Amino acid sequence: MSILKAIFDTIAVMIRLREKISLLPFNTFRIDAGARYLFHLTDPGELRELADHREVGHLVPDKERVLVMGQGSNILFTSDFDGLVIINEIKGISIISEDNSGVVVEAGAGVIWNELVGYAVSNGLSGIENLALIPGTVGAAPVQNIGAYGVEAAEAIEKVRLYNRCAGEWLELSNRECRFGYRDSIFKNELKNSVVICSVTFRLSRSASPRTDYGQIREELDRRGLVDPSPAQMAGIIADIRRSKLPDPAELGNAGSFFKNPVVSPDELQRLREQFPEARYFRQGDQYKISAGWLIEQAGWKGRRVGNAGCYEKQALILVNYGGTTGSEVFDLARQIRESVREKFGISLESEVNIVPARNF
Ligand SMILES: Cc1cc2nc3c(=O)[nH]c(=O)nc-3n(C[C@H](O)[C@H](O)[C@H](O)COP(=O)(O)OP(=O)(O)OC[C@H]3O[C@@H](n4cnc5c(N)ncnc54)[C@H](O)[C@@H]3O)c2cc1C
Image (tube, rainbow, N blue to C red; front, side, top):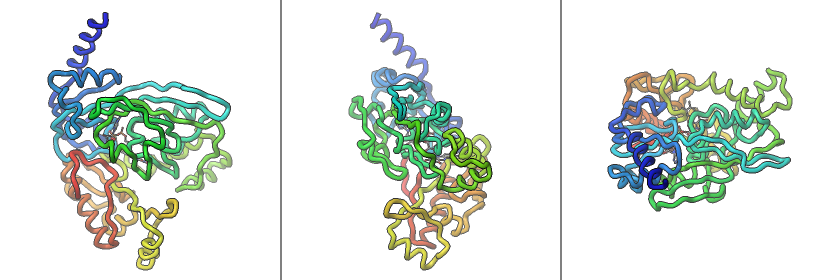
């Protein structure tokens, strides 16, 4: 029985392994890069089958030749990927435990992030409602510690279950072990390119008070006459604000904010404000985040188009594909933007989007 099952599993993997595939449908920038091999992972056990596979098995422990992705909403391909792309489609949301204060929920890495938000708010659970409508999958959320409207995923993540391809071992990392920071985690540093996140466990609350003090939220609450919004109402408001400001990747290829907001010390902020009193910034602990969108706009890039790539007209932080652009064209545009911000303000922007294969500006 187990030998038959092993043979069946191996054949199933062989059938689903595709060769020489365009990644255009699998990245929101809509870049037409190719992948040597592509595999849709639907069960963590298939990782073993892939590792044993005659043709691609040797790639599995190789850092540079495997790319694990979700919806490709935070990736810019600047050339073809000569290796194995694994698209994580492990589904499932289950309750691990619950009490009066909240619920612990485990979600498969391939669950669509906004579906998890929908699950939470429709059950009256709070913690991730401000992250409504962020594209992508649950498995990618801890990678850059997704954040929006004053909330980061790290605040709700309890643990992350993963397979370390390079070490060949299964691990569970606690929130602390994930070393979350602003758009940062262990998965972008020590564990970069070496793990497959298979599920993420969240602690959601039945009673947390809504976080309403960021961006346009307050304005919208007043306009709708809401004083104590439910998680579902918060998610609805945030989804409406996002739809009005951000380009829909189905219509205009993009990967959201291209650069991170640079974080500076109080002294650096003061120096910037002496020269540019109107500079836009937010407090981040005892440091300050300067609005990268504002820096780019002041450097004159908002709405500018270079070939088929451009800087979005409503939000300078987003680079867009007007159709048929290449990843190199977008990368060159990003490099020019970065250079002019550095010249004008003396600040070096860091990309938030993952450049594949990795490239420095
Ligand atoms: C219109 C738009 C708006 C956006 N707004 C926001 C926002 O408000 N806040 C924000 O933080 N982000 C935002 N983003 C960026 C993006 O949505 C997030 O980074 C999201 O988490 C990416 O999910 P994904 O599944 O598409 O990941 P991918 O783009 O496929 O991958 C991103 C990175 O994670 C790695 N990865 C993905 N899945 C796994 C896995 N299972 N195991 C190991 N590594 C993995 C990949 O190798 C890659 O390095 C936005 C993007 C768009 C297009």
